[in-house]
Image 1 (tube, rainbow, N blue to C red):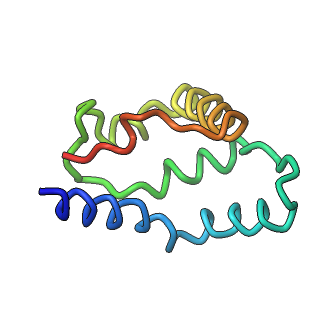
Image 2 (tube, one colour):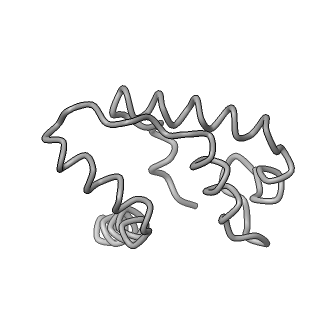
Image 3 (cartoon, rainbow, N blue to C red):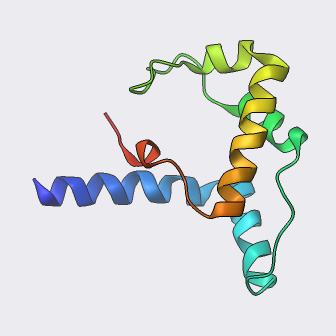
Length: 100
């Protein structure tokens, strides 16, 4: 059972590493030698939500991509604040590490 847990943690934790935007942010952080980097912009968040794959099963929160995309500016605002808080605190919600 432990090996399965490790396998899925590796699978889901590295899947985002292939994302161009994620790599750019990591490179910027490394180049700044730990200095503060710019917060996410609302445009970055809007574009990320727009790029989400549709017709996928929801997670444990039962929120689908279509729901996020339908939220328009409200969704962008909420995620903008949340992502910047995570960036500042360098800690994401524990639930985000769980998969179904």
